[in-house]
Image (cartoon, rainbow, N blue to C red; front, side, top):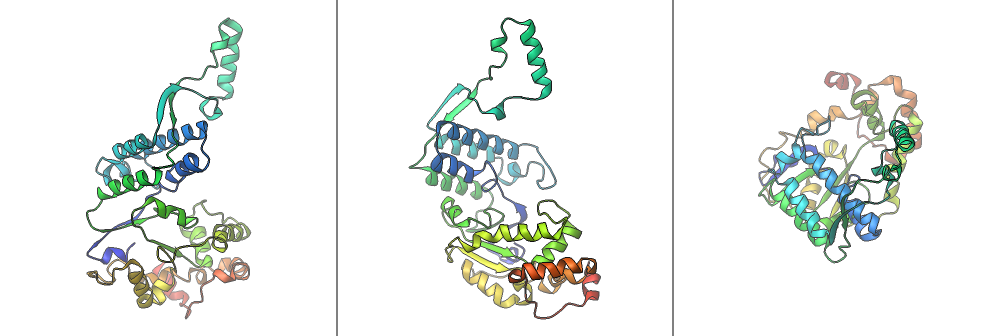
Length: 327
């Protein structure tokens, strides 16, 4: 993302993660429920959950991952409008009703006791557990799902940039990637992987997040393998999907950037600010971190033994003093 910022004809939005396509209840789940596992209940739930998701993203909801109202701002106050229009175009009918999904009921102990007491004192107890009506939906967009999705996303991203090339982070996932190509008029995906030893150290010492299990090295190794297991089975269109190593962008900068330029067909674009945002001479100190934290030496040796095929063969060792100077 930083490298693409350096080109005059590319809009790169940095490291904000555009996840509404791939995350639970996003567009990928819409496709699964509406096309691949369609039923009257799945159809309703898919639309209901997507509308709920986009309303949350469009609101003032904020946490450490999302800037307040980012979706509203970045899409020029059009995110909710275009999203509701998209769902309207996919929906065949609506009505006021309810169904038996237990997630819509409130089964807390407090409410169960309350309802029980009310039943004891009311002869109208049969009405107590009636589920409140809401908007119901049915959709089977077998003919137009991909067409509507492409138009929807094209309209959204045209609000961000008028340039022909727009670079976004986390728009699609690094597994099952091929299916996501169907949602776009023209997309290319670059997937960057990294040495597991450094990822382990980053999770333990810097990021300190529980998204990846790393409280013990065995869980980290098992999770790392599972996340990449799909690579043994999935076939990918090499004209649309490029996999590279983070370390190659640093240790073999020129060759790797030529590969990226060729893949994206931006050889002729003006590289106006070379190394302003992505400088391999600086980023190199963000590699070989496992050489700095010697207290994890036993864990690193186990990672090298169990995940050897994923460990990067560094052309030379960075001195620990150099790493410590930067971190």
